[in-house]
Length: 403
Image 1: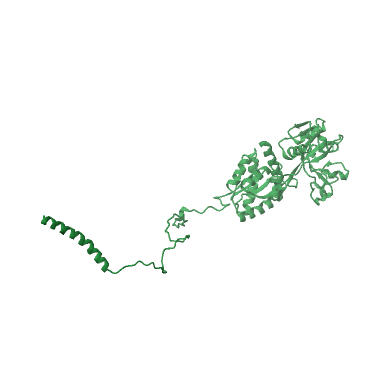
Image 2 (image 1 turned 45 degrees about the horizontal axis):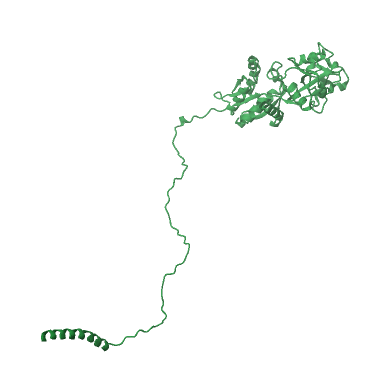
């Protein structure tokens, strides 16, 4: 019993000892108080700022760039032969004549011109007769450094448009560089102008002829003139005979200007009357040399009539008394003498001079001026605008065909 009590007493003593010991130790320690202190403290913290920053840095870029490179190489001389000079025997100058069905006449008459040019210039020429205008245009355009050509007005305009051929001269026929058409009527009728041709019968040699029909027909249309009939009869003489015999009211034919007294000047289109010789009040007559003169020969102060009626004078001496000219067409340019667009200057000048000398001399009468050939009376320098009428008419026809 005593033992049990003793154990209980010891346990109680331990339980009480531990808390009292803790309290005792706590009382012996320094007392700690919490004090609130306020002071300035420097604080460093990151500042956020919105900004746009351009960053530049070098980048290596590779790209392809085309570069022209001149390459020099050695070439043996025999690979680059020197071209023969224009006008040399190896490279003769091509002289193109107007297309014709009578090649023999061209060889004879044209050959005289070729020989004269070779002698005068020292160049070699080759006579060429193209079969048609298209072939002539192609030839002068394809060989512009060595080709000279006689071209029709229409062919010249087309060649100038296609390859800029150089115009040099126009042909003279009866001393003028153009051809005129005339309208003739009987003197005892009341026809005095083109407007009187309304509802009348008109004879023409060829409806394809420019001066004697197409230009006049264009004027009729523009003026509201409508003939009752246009009768194609094949020649100027036949058209005039139809007028004399009363078969038609009027006729068209080629008009060649008269030679004036003493050749003091040339008859002028638009200024002089086509029958200026009537001022002499003397009937025409044929002189011993076959010409139709009024009053006297031109050398002696008279006039020389050269229109188509002169051809009928022997069989119809009344032709001048019974007919009169009531109108003329516009001047239709004669044939053109052209050089290729790249023809060398020095030969160009030399040949031009030689052509002028020959074709304006008496020697031309046996060549291009012969009555069985071109019947020219020479050539005259001309500019491109002289052929403007041809350009206009061709453009009108082209437009009409398209419509």
